[in-house]
Image (cartoon, rainbow over all chains, first blue to last red; front, side, top):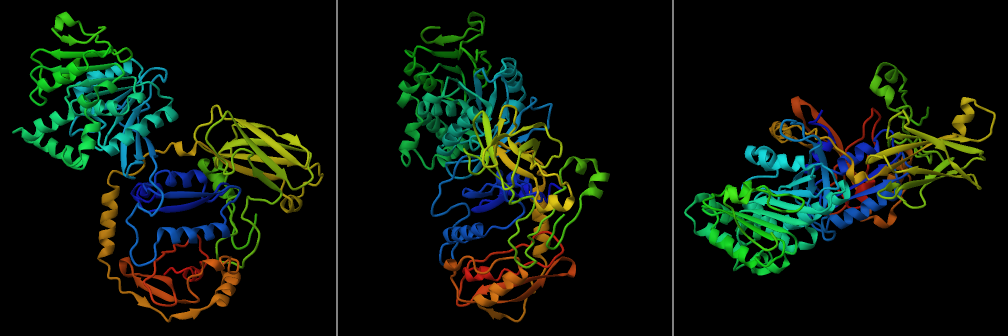
Length: 364
Length: 276
């Protein structure tokens, strides 16, 4: 039946939609009507509630529908592109909340949130694992060329971070960020809306961003744009966006070259073409905005991120009272991921002398 | 139960199927299937004797607050009102109580939102009219029972993901198969219909009132006739085509019939609004 259930066609519907529902309709129960309506991917959709009506017809609804058609079907042969109209901006909306059946991968209660972006009406998704809503909510930002399921499906990440998050009973929101976008404008807007949604729907509060590599760059980019929304940032391996792009662009590594291409694509152009998009996300340009506790970790011998550029970020933040920089001598790209950090206090828990960590920062 | 056209009883289904016995399908009947003369009677279970509203939410889709307040106006002389609360479409109630009586045969029901999951709820009420008669005819003439369905945080309605993993591939294959069927369209005799002819048809056959949106007309008359085209397995698909008189192009509307075995209305009046 799943092939024929109207609810399952709804996520593919992007054109404007006008619906009605009789709330006491015993033939088309409102529960079923909203199961379709809530999953529509349409940027413009409207429900006319016929409270008190059953499986009935309404003259006024017909009249409204004619006017609505006049609005969405402009005169002449050309119809507007799907999902666009002369009026009505898209709004953020959760299209579906689906439990994940793979119990061996996803902790109990984990759901997949599919939502429509208020930025451009496109659909993206995130995963949410409930916890103690009184604890800080961890927002996980995946690395380059991965997705929101990374923290659940990558074994070492799962063993280190997912285990700690669950043990701390932290709610976990893992976001997809339009795949690899380095906190592009749509990803930025989506994260803001997801944080609001998490607070409203799940009672989440005090968000801590946690990301490695591309996720770390994305976390810091968001933090300088929206510091007021965050209780802390754990960035594991990153440098400023301008340096990141330039290093990737000049690298002989095919993966880094592809990364450079993807960043330019997601930002809508190169730095010379979209200077403001890049500058908004530059930590070095806005270090003073990082008012929340921040932990930056980095492997000294990271082959994919230039450590000299990471140190510039650390130096720019060294007088920040709640900033901690951890550099792992001889560490590689992944070494930055395995520093044990208290997600409530953002204090580094590892025995520093034993592991030879180099730490910069006041009040630590 | 009622009515104009068709009806069916849920009893055999409820007696044999434990799922259906839990679902309240006893009112599963309708009187508006666009295949009968127009009448002003609303589809059940709506009744003119009990009307519901909320002082705080016109749509009855509530989103916040500790209490949902529903107002029930009785159109009969009444003594009191009892209520039960159900998940939408579910027979078994999970709360019950007595409404607060006000003068003017008006009642207020206050429901705590604590413990309500996002979704729809049926508030079923039974009016105590103080009348002695319990005959079926008397109750059908003046129903003392009613239902008010309201929503609670419906944008968070929990939805299971039932879309098969190969959903897109399934439909791509089906559409590919259909694309191979020659259209072979045939158009029957097209006739011209003016306002008067469409009004007569609506009132007499389509369970629609006479012209109810004259200011929305874009065309003075409509050309309409039967069409048919090729379908799968050698069959033919039949339908009605109506188009505004005059030169196009016109935006097109595909009208799909509802379920049921009765003939469906031929919505010629849509073309008066400029639609093919």
